[in-house]
Amino acid sequence: MADDAEPAGPNWTRLSEHALVVQPTEEERKAFERLLSQRTPPGPRYEDLVSEITFRGYETYVVGGTVRDVINGTSSNDVDLVTSMPLEKALPLVRSMYGGPQTLRDSAKKNGHLRPGGDPRAGDPYIDLSVFKHSFIGTQNAIFSDDFGFDVRNRDFACNAIYYDPLNRALIDPTGLGIADVTSRVLRLVNDARLRAPGQLGRIFIRCVKFMCKGFSPAEELERQLGDLIQHLASLDAPIRANYIRTQILSKGDGNGRKEEFERFHAVFIEIGGEEHWKLYIEPIREVIL
Image 1 (cartoon, rainbow, N blue to C red):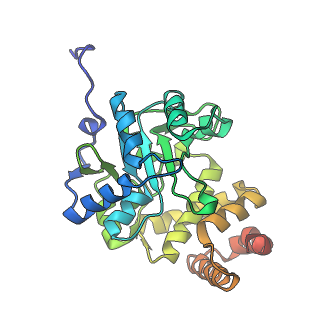
Image 2: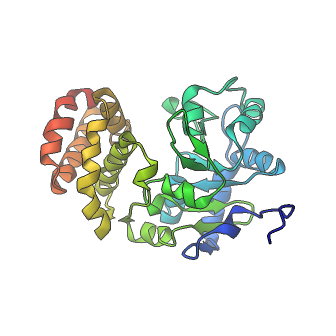
């Protein structure tokens, strides 16, 4: 019988049998150290927040696009962190270090997400701090956890579901597929549709096209799933759909560059059999997007 008084141990001791825990290369380790040593307005370093959370008995990992970019050897503009610290406990710490927010907005409670640091619109460095997700994310009934399995099922692709443990300097790949998918530039869905709202699945479809525009190829199973995913575009109201496409697909460059990116998005969208959905859900909001 398990002893309830025994500590549960860190999250990575409860990984599935398919998971990988590997040592990063020296180059990757140095890249993570450089990122975490950078400062964000009003002055704390990324690693300062990680340390403060750790001192309070919770875990924090670098995750998402930040880890993917380091493995790819490309630059990353921000740092995504995920923690086992509940948002209500993280708020006073974040407020003391960054001067705000004073209270948790409703959207923060629904999504388990804070963004301390500078203003992304001004190009300032900032932190995306999220709590490990469980289910009903984005709703009033959102549940959060400290479990890699559920957090992965709330993400999009295996290549974006790799975690870096800055304390133990280890890469954690819960699916066992993410690191290989980054190096081979493969897109493989890991999200559990039962845990995601239709609008969230519509956003994942847009991200599928985004990564395919960047040279990623869909895994065989994703090719079969695209037809179901594209149906969820209807769940996004037109203004939300336009804004999400704009932020995901278009850079902050000039008009000509943005039009070229949009046309590339259009071409890939049609290549995967989305012509009818383009006419219904994208073409009518073209001018709003651009």
